[in-house]
Each structure stands twice: as C-alpha cells, then as structure tokens.
Amino acid sequence: MITALKLVLKEVVYTLMLIVGVTALLFLFFNLMPGDFPGKGGGLPAYLNLLKRLFTFQFGVSVVSGVDINSILFPAFRNTLVLTLGAICISLIIAVPIGIFSAYRSFKGYSWPLTIFSYIVSSIPVFYLGYLILFFVSRQTGFLPIFYPESSAGKHRLLSYVLPILVLGVGNDAISEIVRLISSELGRVMSTDYVIASKARGESLLASSVNEGIAIPLVSIIFSKVPFLIGGAVIIEFVFNWPGMGRLAFQSTLDRDLPILIVIAFLSVLMVRAGMILKEILLYIFNPGER
Amino acid sequence: MKRFYFEEESIQPEEFHVPIYKRASAQDVISIGFGLFVLSYLIGFYIISITNIFIKNPMEINIGAMFHSPSFDHIFGTDFLGRDIFSRIVKGTEAFFFPGLLSITISTAIGMLFGVLSGFYPRFASRIISYILDIIDSVPRFIFILIIIVLFSPSIYLIMTFVGITSIPKIAAYVKAKVEVLKQHGFIESSRALGLSQMTIIFKHIVWLSSKSVLIIHATLGMGEAILIETSLSYLGIGVQEPIPSWGNMVAMGADYFFQGRVWLSTIPAITITVTIMGLYLLGDGLNSIYNEKVTR
Image (cartoon, rainbow over all chains, first blue to last red; front, side):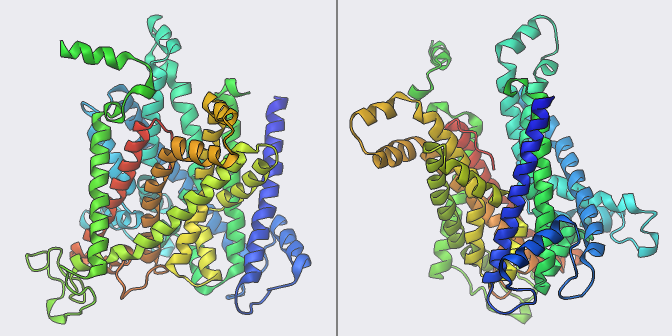
C-alpha cells in the first residue's frame, strides 16, 4: 500500500514538473512568434502569472471574443471527456473479442476476415467514416436524425451521443493495434507452462491467461492512446458539430486566439497524465511481478 | 518424408539461424506483399506527377464536364469543376511525399540519437532526455500542430517537421530498450576488447547491424502517420490549400456533394487514403513479426 502511494506521489510530482515544462515551452514559442500580440512579452513575471492562473483554474478572458474562458471551456471539456471515454469503450468492445478469437485460431480459418476488418476500420480516415455513417444511418434509413433542435437537446441527449462516439471508437487507429497485441500476447501466454498446467488441472484456458495475456497489454496500450484520441476528437467534433474542446481548439486556431489554445493544451496534458497515473495504478494491481 | 523434415526444423528454438524467408508466416507474406504494392504505386504516382506524363492537367477546369461518373475517358470521374479526379489523385502524392520523408528523417535520426545516448549514459543524459521526450509526448499531437499553425505560417513542411518531432519519443524508447539489451551481449564486450572506438561500436554494431529493423519499421509506420496527418489537416482546411490537389481536401470538397448522391467525388480519394495507409500499416506489422520486434504505432 505504501509503495503504491509512493508511486502515485512520484507520478504526481513528475506531472507537475511536466506541466511547468510544457507551459514554459509554449510561453517561449509565444514570445518567438512574429508580430505583436496582446499579452506578449513580460519575461519571467508574466510566465509566473500564467502558471498561477493555470493552477488556480482562473483562465481569464479570450483575446478575440472577450468572453470568460472558464464559461466556455468547462462544458466543452466535459463533452470531450464523454466522447473520449465512450470511444475507448467502443474500441475495446470491438477489438478485444477479435483479438481473443484470432489468438485461438491464428491467421488461418475464420479469423482472417475479422483481422482484415480491423485493419480496414483503423486505416479509414475518420472524417470520411463520419460522412459514410451519417449517409447510411441518418440519410438513407432515418434511424437516427442528423440534427437535434436546441429545444429538445435535453430529451435526446443520449441519442445524440451515439453516432460521434461510435465513429470515433471505430475510426481511431487503436483497433488493429489492440487486435495485433492481444492476439500475439495471448498466443504467447497460452503456450506457457503455467497455463498448460492449469489446463491439465481442468481449468479454462482463457480464464487462466486473462491476466497476463489480456489485462496487462490492454492497460499498457489504452492509456498511451489518449493523446491520439484527443487528436481524433478534433476532427470528429468538426464533422458532427459536437461542442467539445477540439472544435474550440480548431476555432481558436482560425481566430489566432492563443490564450485559449494554451489552456486547452494544459487541460489535455492533464488528461494525458491522468491516464498515465491510472495506468501505473492498474499495472500495479494487475502485475505483481513488477512491484 | 519431406513433411517430417520440416517439422523437425521448425522445432529448433535457435531463432538466429532461421533465415527470414522461413520465419515468415502466410499472414506476413500477404501483409508485406500488399505493403510493397502500395509502396510501389506511391513511388510510381510521385514519379508520374513530377514528370507530368500520362496524366491530364489536374488544374484544368472544364465546366462542360462537371460531375461525370467514372468512365473510360475519366477513370475516376470528374469533380465539381470538371477536373479529372485520377490526375488529381496522382498529383496529390506530391502534397505528402517529400514532407513525409522529411518527417521520417527527423524522427528516426533524432530518435536514434536520443535513444543511443540515453541507453549508453543511463545516469545523466537519460534523465534529461526522458524529461524532454515526456514533454513532447504529453501534449496531444494534433493540439501541438494547431498551436504551431497559430504561431508560425501553416506550411506543410513546417507541420511535417513538427510531426517528426512528436514521433521522436517512441523511436527513442525502442532504441534505448534495444541498446540496454545489447550492452549485455558478449560481442560488444569483445569489440571493446578489440580496441574499436565507441563511435564504431555505437553506429556500426548497435545502430546499423542490430537495430536497423526497428528503424525501417518505424519509417514505414511514420509514413502512414504522415499521410494521415496531412489528409486530416487538409480536410480541416489548414493544410494544403484548395487549388493544389491533396487527398484530404479532395475528400472535403467532395463531401459537399456526398449527400446529393454524387458519392465518388469524396469516396475515391477516401478509398485511396484507406488502401495506402492500410498497406503501410500492414507492411510495418509484417516486418514487425518477421524481425520479432514489438513496435507499437
């Protein structure tokens, strides 16, 4: 328990150091930018002021629109969090059974269409997949409407979540990687001595190799995919007009609104590092050999 | 009798003495074959597009021939200004080919250097390098690129330079792990005893002779990523700008007509992107399993 606490504390301190590094880098870039800009310059005191604003979550006002950043950023952050977490779940639901299946029967037999499917799905560009699914699900069959009016947003909130989460979960390139990793790792673990011994005792092959063959590879890969999911979320939010952080980032890119972008970078670093800390904790639970 | 002979041979655990073509399974052969096909048509398209032979002018507007569906005259049809889609797809390779190579070069060169340094000097260099790499790694790549676009000009070469920089950490981590394993081996010790210089040991024996497979795999996967980033940015309208063809902005322009039933405008570039990226990924994964590396994308 104490070692686990120590581990978490170490990660938290390292995260703080990283945030200082990232914001210093961004501040440096900001001052290298050609042209004059409100809030530019000021040296070390300005940087310390920026850090203070970031760590107290008082982000100030946007340069372009003059709106308080907190009031637009936190709903957007919540929406992106929902989108990313949902997409991870969808990816896992699709990829893990395919991986297990192709570990049981390697490339021959029935599993190759599934493997090829996982490759096609993860290399199809996510923006095109969005249009394709909108075309078939909304336009041709009318199964889910394309657009929800503002007034009924509360009633249909869950329904309107379905398509973006599905598309991001299917279309990010994590699926083929998870399939490949699980099928190779599970195949390796299922032929180790202790699994064969437990099979001889009459226990299930899958149940005895689930920890080393599935849980550890999954934990170590899923959380390293968080940055890529946030990147994919930018495009998905653009396609589906989803009021999230990615669309805000894209909009402020077009507006040259740097303060919002710095805050978004800060929040996404927080998300990525939170994933890393969670990964350390989960690996500590699943992997007693590494303690 | 022959079958027995093969079975006997496959039992032998010594991986070093099995030649590469015998290690490959059917899956690897199919993957690498498909990948090489994709690679060859990419290079072919690039050569055609810089020499301008065999294709129609991709910029030529022909209002009389708008929205022609695929036919013998236009293999992939024409777009909303009557431009030939096939020649635009061929020309579109120019948008990512050289920038992608630039990004691969930057990421492999610097990643290798960082990996070797932090593998050989684990005390001091390793700490600083891993801190720098973690800084790069913890900002999502897309957000990083958006910030770069705000700060500097949205040129595709600059963007690809930063794509290269953001994929340094992965390569450095693998080279570092490789170096740490190789340092224990006898041949490094014996080459030290032979009096070879540190540079020769590092660059000849560790980088070139032992970890070039990692670098090749990473270069393949890196090209796929470069295409993905270029097409996504062009789709969003902040990469290659419209009159110049790029696969991403072809999808974006065709998407306006997608719901009118003129699907080929955006579907054909999208299928090209899918097949190309899938080929590069399959090539990387096939090489991965032949060389017994565990490289993730």
